[in-house]
Length: 184
Image (cartoon, rainbow, N blue to C red; front, side, top):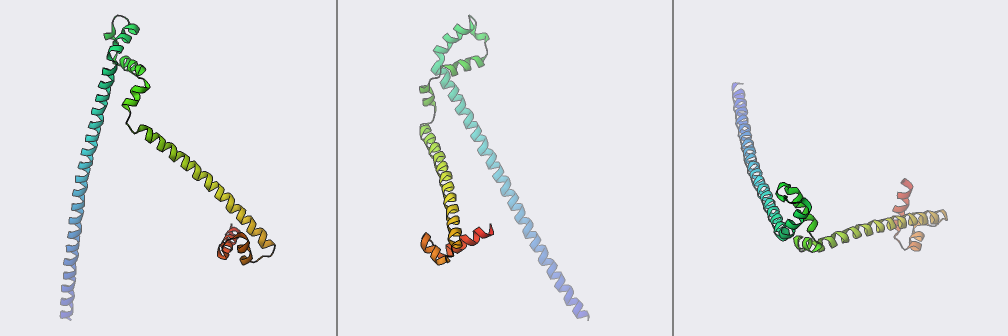
């Protein structure tokens, strides 16, 4: 009896050690996952920060480019509109004047070179979705007509095979469509 209890005790002790080892492995895996997530988060923050800085630099270059393009004309316009003291007016009015002086050619120079292509692609996608909607509506009407034809031919007493031959469809397709229509 004591030997059975002793063997049972050792078996339970071995099972306990096995479970402890499994738990330790799971915890170490979780720690590795946490470290990877922290590293990914830092990389993501770095990427976002560099992206924001890049956008900021591009905006500054853009504003400087606009200022240099319209600087001589701007000073004359400001003096005409504001009177003798243009330095007292805010920078917002200068930016407004710059916006007024931009022509369509200037805007085309500032836009990416593939801007027109992007617009054409957007228009094509819109027409494609419209065409798909129209074709789906036509398909729905055709299916509805097919349902009515099948019902009419069944009322006339034709078999599924005869209906399939008349409508140039498969026998199984006709059976399924009829059963589908009956259920709905």
